Amino acid sequence: MQKKLTITVDKEVYEGLHKNIGPRKISKFVEELVRPHVVRPNLELEYSQMAKDKKRETDALEWAETTFKDAAHEKM
Image (tube, helix red, strand yellow):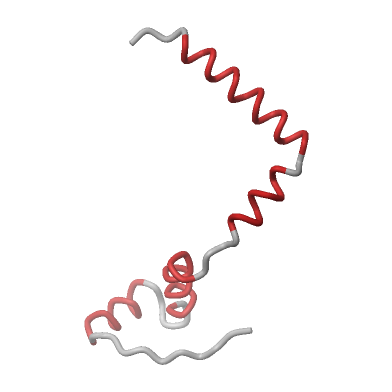
């Protein structure tokens, strides 16, 4: 569901948005810019769901072990 929001910006900012983003694209631009700062995923739930995937966990462990072995042989 979308909600309407009225914001006030400097005339120069408005003109820049209108010119560079486009008059009918400003809302989408602002939403995409702001979203990562205000909408946080439930990482704990997502990580616990990933951990239940046994094949994924096995593959991840195998990758980590191989990477660790490779790193042990690198010269510093």
